[in-house]
Image 1 (cartoon, rainbow, N blue to C red):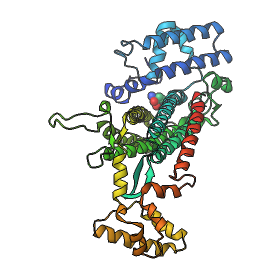
Image 2 (image 1 turned 180 degrees about the vertical axis):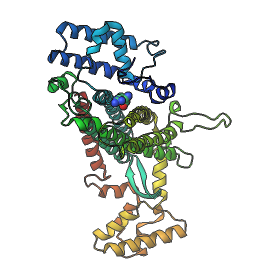
Image 3 (image 1 turned 60 degrees about the vertical axis):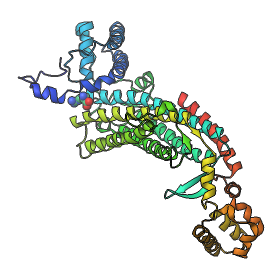
Length: 464
Ligand code: ARG
C-alpha cells in the first residue's frame, strides 16, 4: 500500500523502493505511531470528521494492531515504505474504508516529528533513571571508603592528595550535569507538533492543546514550517548523550589504569571482567574498554545528523529520514553504557593502602608545605622555590617526605617551622582544604550529604 499514487502513471522502481524504504528501522517507532494516531483520531472527532462510533472503532483497531505488533510475525514480508504507511495498511485491513479518513489534515512530516518525540521522551526517561542509579552507586562506593587517601593527578603525574570520596564526587558532578542536560533536552522534545500539516498548518481547526494533553506534552509548537524542518531536539539529545559518554569514557580510562598491575588500587568484580583464551592469568577490564569504545558510535551519530541537517532547504526533505538510525544507535549505546558502568561501580573494590602508599612515596604534599610557608609570611613564589629545592634534594638522594624529621626540615630552610613537618603526611595537608568544594574531610562529608539531597531531588524530577 502507498499513501500516494494518484498523480503517477507508473509505480516506483524496485531499486528506488529498496533504497528509500525505512520500515526496517523505523518500525521501532510503531508504539509511538499508534499512540499518536489514536490521539489524532480523537482530534478528528473534535473537528467532526469522525463520529464518536468511528473514532471508537479506530482507537480499538489501533489497540489490536499494537498487540499484534508484539508478535514475531507482524513485520514479516511487509514492504511498506515506512512505519506510518504500514500502520495505515494494517488499519485498513481491520476496518476497511473507514481507515481512509485517519490521515485527514495530517502529514507524515508532522507525524514523524511526533513519533520521534514520543519515542525519545521515553528513552530520555530511561537514561535519566540509569544516571540516577549510577550516581547512587558512586555515593555508595564513596561511603565504603570514607577515609581513603589517593593521589590526584594532573598530566597523569601525582599532583595532590585527595579523598577517594572526593574523587568519586567529581564524577557525581559530571553525571548530575548530564542529568540536568538531558532534562533540558526533554523539555525541548516535549512539545506537540500535530496540527502543522505538511508545512503550512493543518486545514482543520484541531484543538492542539487538547492533543498535547492527550499525549502528555507540556506545550504545542509555534510554527508549522519549523516543525517540518526541525531536528534540533534530536541533535540536543545526541549532544547530551555524547557528553555523558565522554564522562563514562573518562571514568573507564581512570579505572582501567587504577585496576592495572602498575597501579593495583582497584579490583574490578569478576562479573565485569573477562579472561584471555591464551594467557591463563589475565583478568581484563573489557566492560570499561567497551564503554570507552562505544563513544565512537555516539559521537559518530551526532556528527552524522549534523551533516545531514546542514544546508537542507526549509522545510522537510527526505534526507531527514536519516535522523532515525543515529538516534536509535546513540540511545542504545548510551543506555547500555550507563547500565554497564553502574554494574562496574557496584562491583569495584578499593585496596586503600596502595593509593595511600603511592601518595606517601611521592611529593603530593609539596603544595601543602609551600602554602604553610606562605601562611607563615613567606611570599608564595619564594615558598614555591624552597619546596622545589626540597623535592629536588630528596629525589636526587632517593628520599621520601617521611624521611624528613622536623629538625632536618628546619635545617634545610629556616623558613620551615617544626610544626610544618606534620604536613609531610598527605592526610594532614588535606585538612587545610576545608573550603567548599575542596577535599578537606569535613567539606567532603558535607558534599556527600549535599549530593544525596540532590539525588533525591533528581528522583522526584524523574518521577514526574
Ligand atoms: N519516512 C519518512 C521519514 O522518516 C516519513 C516522512 C515522509 N514524508 C515525506 N514527505 N516523504 O522522514
